[in-house]
Length: 100
Image (cartoon, rainbow, N blue to C red; front, side):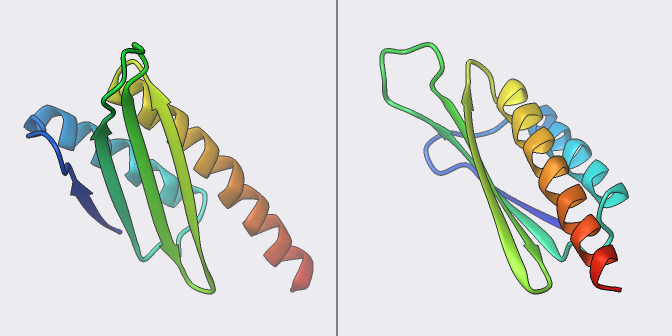
């Protein structure tokens, strides 16, 4: 799976980019037909502490899955996004098995 990370309003450190790719690559064990993942890391201009937003668009045959989460750190937000995507991919796989 190809991972494309975009950081429109800040420069991401290499460690963060590696973290994102490592976490997203785990999704392939739940669903092996993922084409690519578009990841958007954004710093929200708010006074709240939870100002790190992560959006992930997973491209898979038939349908794309989009998940957006906000947290105090990008790592926390990525973990939340990956958990949500895991659940959705498992559901999708179960549905496909039901049709076979």
